[in-house]
Each structure stands twice: as C-alpha cells, then as structure tokens.
Amino acid sequence: MIRLIKSPFYKSRHTTKKLSQFVRNTDWFSFGDSCLRFEDAFASYQKRKHCIMVNSGSSANLALLQALLNLGRLKKGDMVGFSAVTWSTNVMPIIQLGLIPIPVDVSLATLNVTPMELTKVIEKWPLKAFFATHILGMCDDMPEIVKLCKTHNVLLLEDTCESLGTAQNGTLLGNFGLASTFSYYVGHHLSTIEGGSVCTNDQELAEMLRVVRAHGWDRNLSLKDQGLWRKRFNINSEFYSRYTFYDLGFNLRPTEIAGFLGLIQLEYMSEIIQKRESNYNLLKTRVFDKNNAFNPIDTSHLSPYSSFAIPVVVKNIVDFGRLVDICKDVIEIRPLVGGDITQQPFFKKYSSYNDYPLPNARLLHTNALYIGNNPEMTKAELRRIQHILLKI
Ligand SMILES: Cc1ncc(COP(=O)(O)O)c(C=O)c1O
Image 1 (cartoon, rainbow, N blue to C red):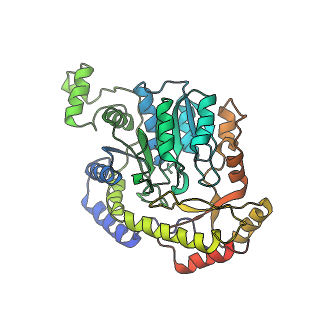
Image 2: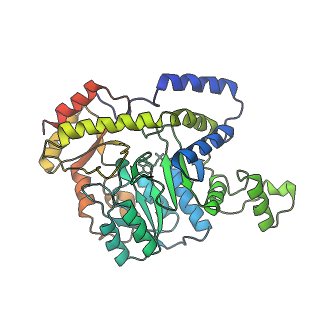
Image 3: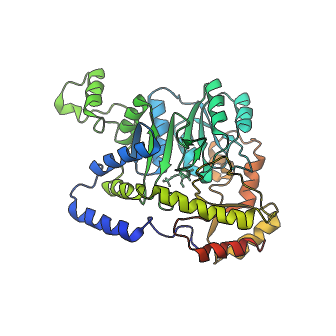
C-alpha cells in the first residue's frame, strides 16, 4: 500500500537520533529557546520580519483572527471571504469568532480562487477580509488578488498550511498579504509532528499574536515591548505584571520538541521541495499530459512549485468511481482537502446563507481526490501510481 504519509520526518533516523539526544539533555520542554530559535530561522527562510510559532496550523488560523479582532482591524459580524475548497479549520475560526464566512469559488485549472471569482463576491458582499487558502501547493493570480484587495480595502490573509515553499513571480506564497499561516503537521512540507506559525511584517500584529498565543499575557514579548505594554496599561507593580492579562487569548504554545524538530527539518527544505516537485512533474508528463480523462492542472505560473500532494480531477463521475475502486488497498487516497467546505455538516449548521453558486468547488467535491507526495517516494512507487492512473 502506498501511504499518504510515509515517515514522520524527512531523514527520519537522523532526526529521531538527534531528538533523543535533545530530550536526554534538556530540562525545559515548554516554549523556550528552541522555539525562539526556530521562529528566527523560519522568519528568515520565509523572508518575513516576524514568525510566531504555535502548536498547529489550525491554532495559527485561530490566533490570527483573534489578534485582528483584538486590534479592532476586524469586528464581530464582519464578512470574511474564504476559498470554497479548503480545510475545516480555515473556516471554523471565522465562525467561532463571530465573523461571517463567505465562500469564493475556485478555478478547475489552479484549484484556487481567481481574481474573477473574488471580484464577483466583492461586488455582492462587503468583505472586510479575504482568508485565501493556497491549496495543494498552488495559487491562482496572487499579484492581481493583491491589487483587488487593495482597491476594495479588503485585508488579505493567506492560509499557507499546504504551500510552504511555492513562489509566484519570485514571491513566496505567504508573503502577498498582511499575514500568513503555516502548518508543520506530519506529512506537510516541514514536520514538527504537530505545529504551526503565523508570519507577518506588521509589528503591532506580531505583538498581539504573542499575547493571544499565551493566555493574553505579555511574557513572550521582547523586554522593550513588555515595558511599552506595561506603561500603556499603567502596570507598575512587578508582582502583578507577570499575571496581567491584556486581551483575549488562548494557550496555543508549542513545545521545545517542536521547536527543535523544526530547526532540523528546515535545513532540508530545498531538498524536500525539489524531490516533491520532481515526483509531480514525472506524473504530469507520464500521465496527466497524456490521458484526457483527467482535468488538466496548471502550475506553469509557479516556480518553484512546492507540491503538497498529487491532485487527480476526473472528468467523468463513472471513471472517478472506478479509480476509487482500483486504488483500494493499493494506493491510499483522500478527497481533495475538505472538498467544497460548504457541503460539510458544520458549515450547513452554522451558516445562514446557503445559496452560493460554487460549481467548480462542487465538481471537485464529487470528482477529485489526492494521492500523497513525499520526498521519500521511490521510483517503484511512482511507477505503480502511473500504472494505476493510466487504467482510467
Ligand atoms: C489549508 C489548511 N489549513 C489549515 C490546516 C490545519 O493545520 P493543522 O493540521 O496543523 O492544524 C490544514 C491541515 O491540513 C490545511 O490543509
């Protein structure tokens, strides 16, 4: 069986050996020096001023929206657009935090939101923010989406949990908007087992994210920022300052184990991206460019294209059913992320609007699946996948 996730980390043996040494020699496992070092290293990899590490990509999405609410840049009841094909915990915090989720349809060629679809939604609904998901390592026309959001005063946020490392016109995904979120879950590009982060260049937002991440207190701010917060809130007592809770928060802190793992895995990023991209290109030339049973997918505007998984969109529903049957016990497959998320029970329960026209998301919900792609995939596994896909 070709599994979606093959191993917990890239270079697993080396990484687990280092991890056991780290565990033996460390006596502090809650958020600390390794997490801080990872934040610096990731911010510099991603070319952003600030990286705020949390315990998952879902937490990163939650923290980002809470921080924007705390700062008054979003208000309860504001409409937030999101990509109709996404993951549950991209949309759930929008609902949980009292914002109104508005889905935007995606393109069948890029699987992501196009400027045209976003325009249609902006013309109909007064969006305050657009939380784009770059699904499966891809995006549509981000420079145009940036322009559109600027023109209409819409905050652009990027869920980059599946697209670490992809760039469009030389800009890494995650660097087009005000802030971006990342996931370091096993099987994503960089694994810390569980983990995530928010990146931004905005100092005020970064400070608020650090407050939101840990109980609403100021302990993870720099000494200088701590001083400024205490002055602003008139906190003069040393005794109470450590237990002053400034604004709404959670406890979303990662552990030192995640920070340590992140530092090791980050060194392999370019190798990981290059191997995944080459796996994808091989299947593209040998299968998808040849067999017109599949909807063609366009990654020509991306360089590098940091492939997350192998998306398979089948034109005919009968062929799709056959493919699902053929893969059984041979290749582990799954729906395309969360499918059309408006079809999920949670969305139907909590959204009062249900008449969004989302034809492409609907088609991807019924006719698409994905196969894992990882840097340790062997030639034999790729041949097996090719053989199965060519049966359709
Ligand atoms: C687009 C997207 N956003 C957010 C998440 C949540 O990340 P995590 O699993 O680290 O909570 C995922 C998870 O796969 C995802 O695919």
